[in-house]
Amino acid sequence: MDQGRRFVYVIKNMEAQPRYYTGLTSNFSARLANHNQQNGHHTSKYRPWKLDALFEFADEDRAIRFERYLKSGSGAAFAKKHLR
Image (tube, rainbow, N blue to C red; front, side, top):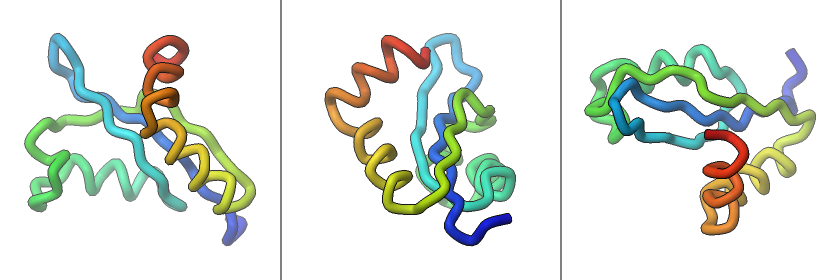
């Protein structure tokens, strides 16, 4: 895999009114496993998590900007309208 490749991901849990979490990683499957383990991370209390959306970027800078956008007010509104 290309060293510069990064993934912006949105995961959700299985509650009736699900919670969503957005993150950035170079290895999504390992990161999802980490979210689903009980290791003190703030997402562990809402597990299990499953993939909701995954975006691949060829360079880290663009991935970082997109993750920040999704976590912003306008990005959260975009995600609510188009991704959920």
